[in-house]
Amino acid sequence: MNKNIKVSTKNLDFYYGSSQALYDVSLTFPSNRVTALIGPSGCGKSTFLRCFNRMNDLIPGSRMTGEILFDGQNINQPSVDVVTLRSRIGMVFQKPNPFPKTIFENVAYGLRVNGIRDRESIQERVEESLKWAALWEEVKDRLHTSALGLSGGQQQRLCIARALAVKPEILLMDEPASALDPIATQKIEELIHELKKDLTILIVTHNMQQAGRVSDFTAFFYMGKLVESNETQKIFTRPRLKQTEDYITGRFG
Image (cartoon, rainbow, N blue to C red):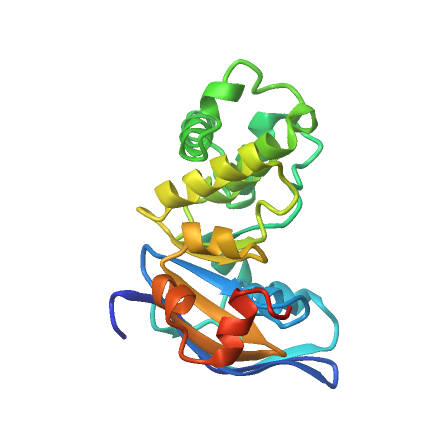
């Protein structure tokens, strides 16, 4: 496997019961780059994203065929430990979803689940993760207050810190700024730029400007099929297909 490719899909099909949601998707994701998944609502972007940490396993009747290769290993094999997989491939959802616990305990949660008990290690990792998520300065004096008291933008960065605490290699982001105001959105976008130095990031976004600002590569989905993928600049300035151009310029979707 090309060492510059962190993860890839090969002939991926996905079904909810008898309904097919993804058709024969083959795509590669380079290390330390941001890939944006774009396309109209219901086109399969979020379903595709959730295949990478097998979140779709939780949906009764769903099934996936084809391969997802992560560092050369097919994560779709029954032998794969899903708990370990989800610590290596973190996820941030559309709406901030902090636990009703303190700021500190939100970030420490994944560490405890993964069996880390040493108080000093947890303390260090929580601070490191909050710094990594550009939140430490705002919350360092209130770590033991409820996370639910934070603003929406702070809550989303806390959820990013929570995902980062277990040191993932890939971060999945499902419209992470769609519920946020423009200032909070800008902070999340700046954070994405910083995080890609250490992580490979896949982001679903409906916002074409955001895709253009944060991503290195863009993949356009329509009706469960991958229509076109390329470097973001090429997709936005010289798409190969008229369908891609029509979507990007707002003619449909």
